Length: 449
Image 1 (tube, one colour):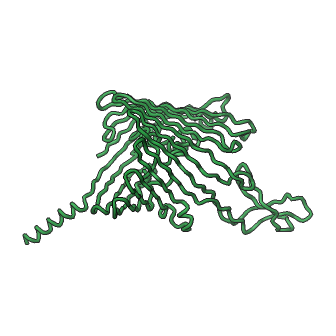
Image 2 (cartoon, one colour):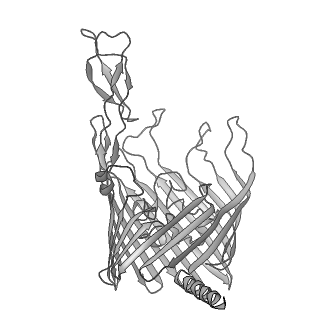
Image 3 (spheres, helix red, strand yellow):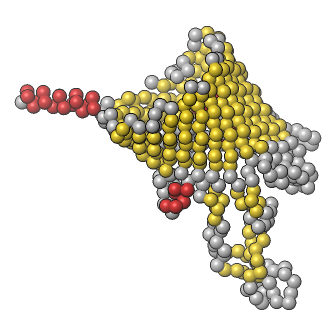
């Protein structure tokens, strides 16, 4: 009996050593002590000051290796930004040092993003709280709602980090070839369309810096199917005379004509299937460190769509140009990032610019002060007019976000700040050029263990 017990203990120890998992947890709580804006409700009354808060994250994650060739990762979010329970993970196989196959994801954090200080690294861990403006200028539609983000020029978005098949090929320390095959993120689609959406990257780590070229594939263009039925009350003929696309809305309608009558029919489109216009993108990145100074440069080329005009003419999308700079010393530093959408078609697109700067200061061993300030500018395209027929003017938005951090950068911390911003757009119905001001006084805590 004692021998059996001893053998069981040995097996337990061996199994524990072979399948050891490093487990961690993170909890984030946010509160807006006060929150409001200078706008008015539909009745013309000033909006009320409110308070809110919640747990932005309750996460457990871990990773481990079964042996030197196989391993895995898991993440469980009991409280997720989407408001739902969320679980992520991956398994990997590395038969040789030069090749690794991974199935799964890491919750969208990405495996081979190239954005440096212009992305999550601008605010770092406070990004995940409500004390800063977080990823507003990185993903989403920017703080000001202009539609431009830094990831228009720097590759780090798309489906990278989601569940998929990933190939990591490293012939040597200087060269990396990263491939994402979207079998999972685009499951159920035709095989040809799946492979068209492959993401491939060449990553060069050189003595003077990092150069990367990333291709993010798209399905291309498919016209919507024509309707299988037409309705024309009072018409004598069902002969299709053609289709018309509204250049303002993109809506396509099909019509019929009555013989001998003017071509002013009444018609309705039914049936048919949706098409798509999904072009590929190419991103070029350079990142380098020069003593206390680091630089990130990005160029995003987004291939043409076919959504212009009634004949599906080519629409050359704006080019994204981005720059990030960080200068860091022991007691102070500054971060800067900017991105420009440079229009290639002045009849459809106006130039959009975002720029943020954030100086920071080391106050004591466990306290740092930050001041984030930014501007955004949206310019109209050629001869652009609004619904009233008036010429559209340029719009300038801004934000001001000072905050304190007490605690560890990668451990436990308390955060408190002030957030003030404006999208620069005229308040509908107000006289003059009145704009709305949004403000909040947030606090947050992050505890990782």
